[in-house]
Length: 251
Ligand code: IPE
Ligand code: IPE
Ligand code: MG
Image (cartoon, rainbow, N blue to C red; front, top):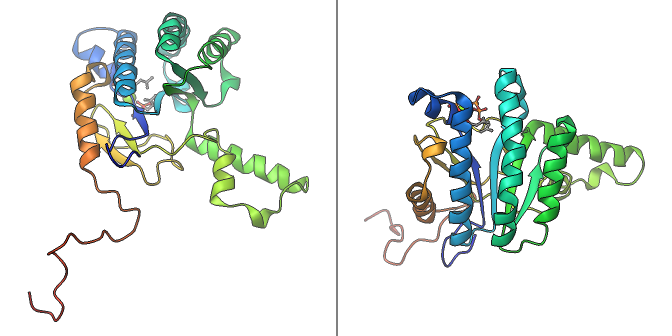
């Protein structure tokens, strides 16, 4: 985090509530996902304006494959279309896009779109937008364990030398700083398999607002709330002058 401005370096968002947003308007769930795309576009701009370095958004979990096929199809279609439509503006804004998750399950068409957006925005220096797609934190951790175990079995590393840092470097998020702030919309208070390792010391911000309604005012509110938090990392905060504990038991 930038201590002078208290702007989080890395904001991660669980964009939840698209389906309920649609239902409340008598619309189909996929229309909620389309509206969610508009909220994402605006949030990318807002985050970049604040000077946030990394914005990670949870867009599709490994568990989401279990939704009705027509919804999964609509989401895959939206990913392809969204990527195609948004790439020029993202590149122009200097936003680099990275995909976080297991790409092996996507169709060739989706894979192609994801590779294209990563390649075409690779030069972006202003902000990194990380799209968590087919992402599962437990999967990621298990994959890291397999990777390190293979290296150990091949004699490339000594198991006793595995540290928090080297383990972190075996995760999909290698090289990306941990999130400072995790936002979840739609009034749900859970992580749903998102960044379990990385969010160890993140601040959490929950709002009842459904993702498609998450606008600039909502983002500002989350940023203000973050700025007011006292991150202690398990340490004792130094006492402000004049407020030290009584010396001899008297106030
Ligand atoms: C989040 O909105 C988007 C995805 C999980 C893809 P939901 O689709 O989960 O919306 P609700 O939670 O059913 O309202
Ligand atoms: C989490 O939302 C995943 C995404 C936002 C992509 P879900 O709607 O899938 O999570 P649960 O089912 O409420 O835990
Ligand atoms: Mg949901």
